[in-house]
Amino acid sequence: MSNILITGGAGFIGSNLCEALLKDGYNVRCLDNFATGKMENIQPLLNEYPDRFELQTGDIRRPEDCRKGVEGVDYVLHQAALGSVPRSINDPATTNEVNISGFLNMLIASRDAGVKRFIFAASSSTYGDSQSLPKVEEVIGKPLSPYAITKYVNELYADVFARTYGLEYIGLRYFNVFGRRQDPNGAYAAAIPLFVKKFMNHESPTINGDGENSRDFTYIDNVVLMNKLAMTTTNPEAVNQIYNTAFGDRTTLTQLVTMLKDILSGYDPEIADVAITYGPERKGDIPHSLASIEKAKQLLGYNPQFSMQEGLKEAVKWYYTNLTD
Image 1 (cartoon, rainbow, N blue to C red):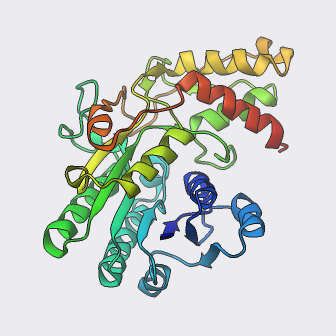
Image 2: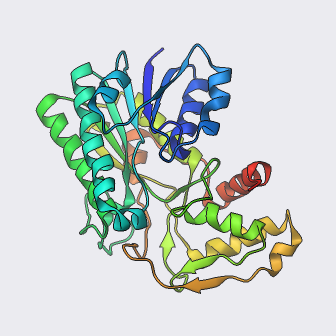
C-alpha cells in the first residue's frame, strides 16, 4: 500500500484526510508545526494506527524538514498553509513565507525524492475580482489579497515544476470548506464554526456586509473525496490540472445563518430568539463565489456526496458533541 505525506495533517482538512486514508489502509505521515493544527485532531489516530500513522513535527519553511517528510513517500497531499484573507492583510510577510517559500520547499523536496504525484490545496480566492459565475478554472481575475496572491503563485510554481522537472501535480481550488474539527476559536476563525459557537452561547452572530454576498460552501467529505480522486486517478488527461473543489451551488450569508439557526434550534429552542447582526464589509472578500465542477466530473469522475444543507446538519451534530468551550 502507498505511503502518503500529508502536510498540515493536524489541521482541520489535513486531519480529516489522515483519518480517511488510514481507514483506506494507506501508510500516512503527518508533517505539522502546530501553528494552527491541533494535537487533539490526530491523537486518536496515533492511538488507533500506531503501525501506519507517523507524526513528524516540523515546518515547511525548513528545507530539511521537507526532505525528511518526503522520505519513502509515494504521494504528497500538501495542505500546510497560513489561511485567512484578514490574516494575510494584517501580516503579508509571514503568509508569503509559509505559503510561497514553504510551498517551493515542498516542491523541491518532492522532486528530489521522486514523489509520484503532488496534490495541493489551492484556493477559490485565486478568482479575485473576476465577476463571471460560475467560476471556471481557466478564467480568473486579479487577486484581492496577499493570501490570494500566494495561492495563485502555488499554481504557477506547480505548473513550472511539471513542465521543467516532470513532477506530476493536481491543484484543488477549495471553496469555503466546513465541517468537523474546524476550529471556532481564534481571531481568524471561519464563518460557519464562528456562527455556530455564537449561537450555542446565545450570542448574536455578525455578518460582514449586507448578507447578500454568496459562497459555494463545501462540506469536508466532498474535499476528502476530491483528494482521493486526485491521488488515484490513472487518467493521463487529469494530471497537471487545477480543479474547483466544491458542491456547485451558492448560498448567501443571510441564508446560511438562517439555516444554521433553524438546525441549532432543534438542539436548543432558545437559539430561535437570538438576533442576527450586520457589520462592515471585510477587506479582500470576493462578493460572490460559485464553482463549476464540470471539469472535475469529466476528468476525475467527481460526484459530491454532501449538499450544503446535508453538510450543515452533520457539522452541527459534531459541534454539539465536541464543542464545550
